[in-house]
Amino acid sequence: MTAGSSGTAYEQTVRDALRLAANGPARGVNPQVGCVILDADGTVIAEGWHRGAGTAHAEVDALSKLAPGAARGATAVVTLEPCNHTGRTGPCAVALIEAGVARVVYAVDDPGVASSGGATRLREAGIDVIPGVLRDEAEAFLGDWLTSARLGRAVVTVKWASSLDGRAAADDGTSQWITGAAARADVHRRRAGHDAILVGTGTVLADDPSLTARDADGRLLAHQPVPVIVGDRDIPTDAAVLRHPREAIVHRGHDLQALLAELLRSGIRSVFVEGGPTVASAFIRDGLADTLLVYLAPVILGGSRLAIGDVGVPGIGDAIRLRTTAVEQLGDDLLVIATPERPTTDQNTASNENPVTTKNGQH
Ligand code: AOF
Ligand code: ZN
Image 1 (tube, helix red, strand yellow):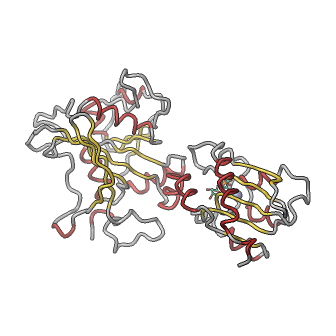
Image 2: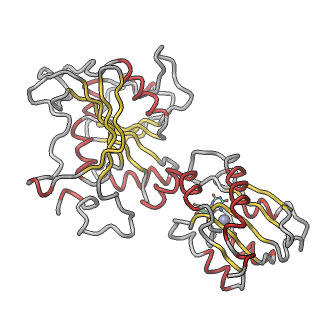
């Protein structure tokens, strides 16, 4: 490899491209992508970024700022592998080939089934392609967009609050409030960090939750996750969730993987699952709980109202093992954050040999 084709020479430019990418919308169907075009001397001649689904991709946005022929022999530095498909716009790999660029440098491979393959196409056209420059930074930047694209579904956080002995309610069903104010404020902050908040119809009927994200004074936080309700039972027309600032999505089916794939297609990358126990257990059983957030209050309730029910674990050998990624104390309560020991795998590699991704707990 010649000095000129070494990726490290382009790290600063990839960093600049990531900064450009951040100008685009952080939520929605499409990723934030940035592009810098350098002439043969390494001088920046154009910059571009993507402004959301239906608009020009970053590469095409940058090329559009150049006179015809001006990109001949240039280097395009992009945060994501140029796409190879005609989606809402045309393939960027072709646009770069037609513009006559000599080299393409990028950070992260395109995870899309239809859109990937741009690097191969560019190489076949004789273009020098340097992948993986600042890959880790760019992967962290893309966050849930990348994870959800690789999984082919929205990423899931399952949250519950329970007594120290794992009960979500007292025997008569009352549950307000098991955890204290600090833990509840933490939940609201994390709700606002997700695109959707999901509960079962049982929880809507039992608790009539508003499913909004609020501050300590009850004011709505800037971002409100879309409420999603799953289950077979009808919701009363005066349910609080129907007054949510975002229109609720009601889902009747039981195929959670299909629901999450559907949500991703509508631009929902992350879902905060708030229960009740039946719904939370179903996500865990189906291998769809990517992160668990467990708030534990120093109180004992005993009885039968367990926070989590059947998750398809008949014997200890089948236990769903987790890795603890953080423990925080919030007032008197504890927050434990854990993820499955085996990462939830992507749609293309999921197989019946992997207990985390099989349905119905069949191992
Ligand atoms: C973007 N912006 O700058 C790049 C993308 O349906 P489309 O045509 O908007 O294609 C979206 C896909 O194209 C996206 O999921 C990603 O795989 C690829 N590259 N997308 O939105 C961009 N370069
Ligand atoms: Zn593209």
